[in-house]
Length: 188
Image (spheres, rainbow, N blue to C red):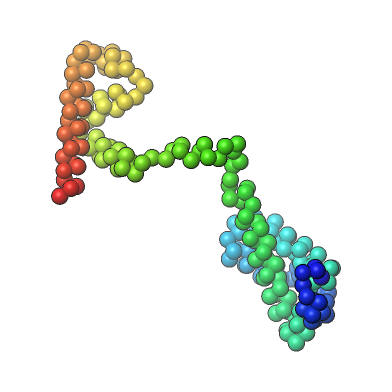
């Protein structure tokens, strides 16, 4: 027994050595406890093996000391539940199970991808307003937001660049008016 246990508790019940077959016979119970603890089905067999190895090691070291008055199978099942619960906790605490990726500077990732909630709401309102515009306005606005210049867009569509710029200006004003109307409608 580990030294942290008082001798009275360690000697309360005699050590029992059930055969390995008795441990293996409880595989279904162990698997059910693992699933209940949240272990993924693909990992159950591996963790089940860890449970059986830990239980067998404990039996060999004399750490299985059930109450002699208890039903032997129920005592073994209760003891295995405890080992299974601990092994599941160890498994679920591992980084690869939590799908963590180690990085050199974890604090550097905190600001990346964080968007202000108000900005997110404004962007959603702008997208809703964009969808409500006539198709030719929406197409021109999306083209202007892309990597292509307005001049290149005009050439690709056989349009005059000055006319395309003017149409883009009209489309932007229509989008701004639609967004403003949407904001004033929400405040009421």
